[in-house]
Length: 121
Image (cartoon, rainbow, N blue to C red):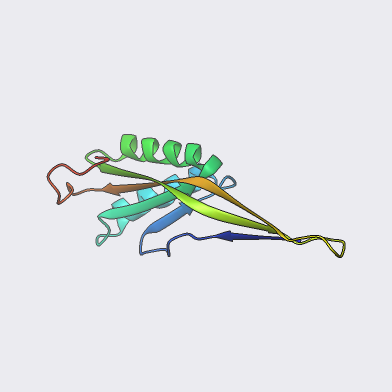
């Protein structure tokens, strides 16, 4: 038996977490709808881990192309994942493996960042 412990930050309002199976077209449509139709939306948060980072980049580039005047801020982090392997036979030890996964967070906003020169802008 394998237990995986993945610690991701909780979702905020207007936050989208993409996976490898996410369809970029649906995420793009939702982003366009939120920016154009919902008047209280001026910022969207996107995040992806590992292999889903390429989907995230596609989504953000298309949104920046379709909605002029967007400002983009990037954060690149690593998160720790612990995999626990239980033995199938008695007398064997439990194995715990730690690995790190890359997490990319992108903030798209119609307003300029409050900080004058933020890292990742």
